[in-house]
Image (cartoon, rainbow, N blue to C red; front, top):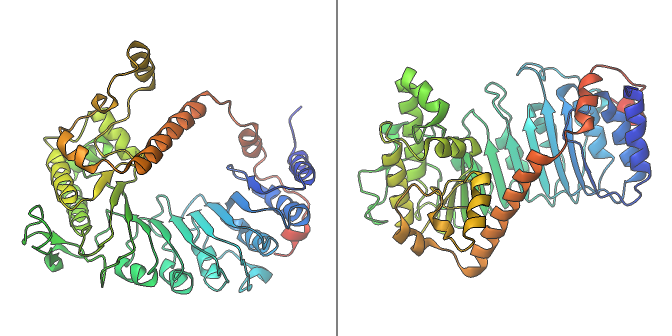
Length: 421
């Protein structure tokens, strides 16, 4: 018998009631109108124990999200995915009594927002987050909703050690870094045109021979940022001349040239003058890595290999490790899992460094091998990622996903949390 929205609502509330020590609550599918009643149940039965929440809601439920956070003061980690059918859906969402609410989350250390979260950011700028250390903002592919992240960081950026900005509209990176002096890890979109090439500043000739005095670079800092050790780069889909971006670039060469030029200027600015403590630059796009894998490396014709060689030489000459999103050196491509199993069965002692490499950088790689402790951690991370990929392929589809899709749009009686909006 198909479950109704009311039945699903009651089932989730019953589960929460039977977990008096609930610390983590994650629903990674759209919750629809069940969010209000479920959030009210969390506030009633997990008020003191709940530490982590992961919600997937529509923009129209923003008032309920605000009231839910206000009722959960012990939360340490919050991830909220705001779903909307278009960039315009969130405009003018009436907040009712939730507008300008003064919320204090004294224990919140990690805040992660995804989707159309612009209006949420405006409200959260006036809240109190004394313990906030990590912030992540992912606008997905929305081009017109530009959240006021700078104002948020003006209020809450002083204590951040981790900041991840993944959005298409360009942000003022130098101002962002000025507002976050304690950052250790920083990620941004490497496709941003942070400074026109004709105004870009020359790189210091004293850095390395790999950075000539005529080399141009973007302005990422007003003054050197000494604490940053890891910089992540979103985007880069046009950088290596592979995948669907290469097809677009063939049809629109100017677009490919402009984005590639921005990539070059931004990477050139990742040097020891701007970031004295920089140890790692990491390309974060998993789609880009898949394209490289499918193409067996950067394109020679599209200039991708020349760009890769240039970046590799420039960064490694300064002792900076160039990695992909898995933590491996950029250039160590993922292998097909079936081939991996067969190779392990044939020869368990085969040298892993010879598998899937498309660059001849053995000498440079040996110089960049991290300390034993750090290297051990990277290997554990890669093993964990492999296990996650295997579990993703073999696990059964979630029953909740189909339930929410089938019952989307069905209304429920209002709970105390939902009625307050």
